[in-house]
Image (cartoon, rainbow, N blue to C red):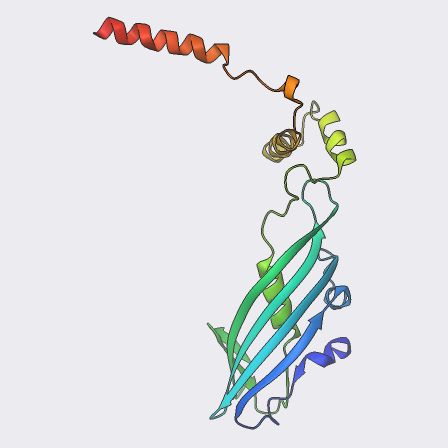
Length: 202
């Protein structure tokens, strides 16, 4: 816990009232948490602590950016974060966190390390799917995926592969003379069939 000692919150020595603390998260924070998914970060954490009658009301506000790998091309993808986390802490006989929004810590603990609360807040803010906007992925990786699209994917990967290819096809802007015609002849045939069916019913 030595690497994260700066996140020790001195609860026992806090007088009643409102107190403000601030922290900064960079790539080293996530390295210390042994998280290789977050490659870099520049996140400011503002912590407000309201101490009243032995109860500590903690509100974390996280703003900034973090960097993860794009699901499609694996290049760095910068994502914004602007979120809050709220928890109430009080002293008790033993450590307990089985109640929503409430943590009890032993009377003998003079401080509370908030590093894992902050870490969990960042991780929960990461979207399930994180990809570059269409057309912004690494072109070499795009070409490589297209080259191998004819290969049969492993079991369970068919849907993912189709999704990757569809998104990368959509990311390419066709030249004006390569764009599809306004009227697809197949739709014209279907419209004719529909009209004939309508005429017969009349």
